[in-house]
Length: 255
Image (cartoon, rainbow, N blue to C red):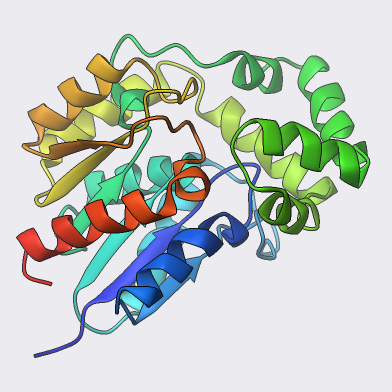
């Protein structure tokens, strides 16, 4: 039997360091063959002429999947989840199973969070991302540490924050302004990708209300699992709980 690859895709403004604690926990529980994918501009170089649009990131992710032999179980977070939803809308059978937070982004009533609204606003967004890039290391660590990243993970992420990441943030969020996400939600539900898990972190204020996440999940027959006392960076806050629910999910579809 061909070994299944566990693929992890992170979001914005992040690098693959956000998965460190969770991957360590999975390794300790015997899970191997883990691959972390970094979207262009977010811990990986951008190709020449990269526009950082939703479609470009969709096609990038599909291209990465195509290079992996055998079945894939994908875990996606934040905009990594958004890229996955777009990929599965185009090719719902490209992975064996999927697990993702931020499913509420695809609910027709989703409203972008305040930071996203800033980034989507001309001039205001440019100032906001410039401020992010200019943050002193200790200030970045303090801010993102208070939001759920551990200090060591925040320090690693900080090293990947630069002007090219800032450019990609603006381009991606502006391309994803509503009604883009609502349209993606319709496509995702119509594609109905199988073997899904909606990861719910009740203190995540970026992903939309919990009931909207569960509602979208039900429309594609996905199960839901809640990581209590966790927010947007649940994989940093509760890595042991996250590892357990992922292993349970993978077992349910044949580890």
